[in-house]
Picture 1 (cartoon, each protein chain N blue to C red):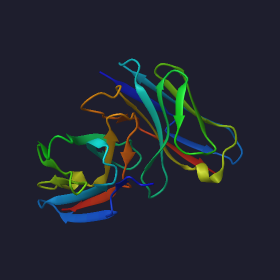
Picture 2 (cartoon, rainbow over the protein chains, first blue to last red):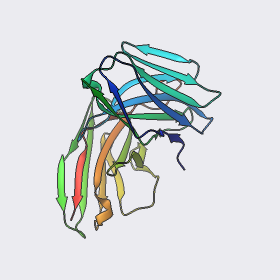
Picture 3 (cartoon, helix red, strand yellow):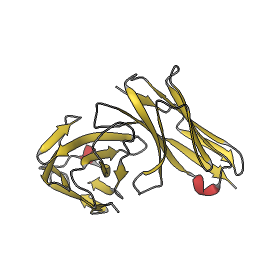
Picture 4 (spheres, rainbow over the protein chains, first blue to last red):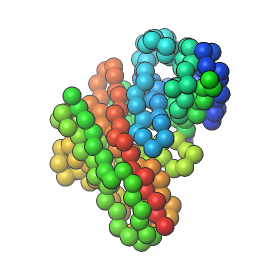
Length: 112
Length: 115
């Protein structure tokens, strides 16, 4: 079953505007959430994370928001830059598990 | 600092041939190790993970197997490749799960084409 879902396969935004990528999960045991960025033919690189005890984490242009009651998290990129164009994966893990579940990814295109 | 090496970067193999992909981690001990596959246009599918030497958990029944002969070495194998085994294979590592962070760090990946 797909415990982590990214329902938007692609997103296109103008340079300088905000990019909002969304992710939903079903497993209430998940307590740590991550966003990875992936360029073609490369491995994903860790971008930002958030623990379930928080509802917001900010790192420069990147902010992750967590809504536990809705089982929803989002990644905001402000301002968006052409170099942000990549596939973004949402991931989640549970305290008592060693593995991690990934969403299908959202391809972000930032147009100059 | 920790680094993860995965090779080869690209591999073209005929149907029915064997497969061996290797992954090694440096700069850490007793890591968790993972093999993922990304099929074309799809997300990351966890294939195997290992919490220690010779301790392998399989997520999906398939034509592949994994082994961990040494603490920081993880090998993905197949005796006979199928066309459906084509994809982008990724190795990853993480520290042992504890309260708080559980971040996986990925290798550069292997593009496998089975023809």
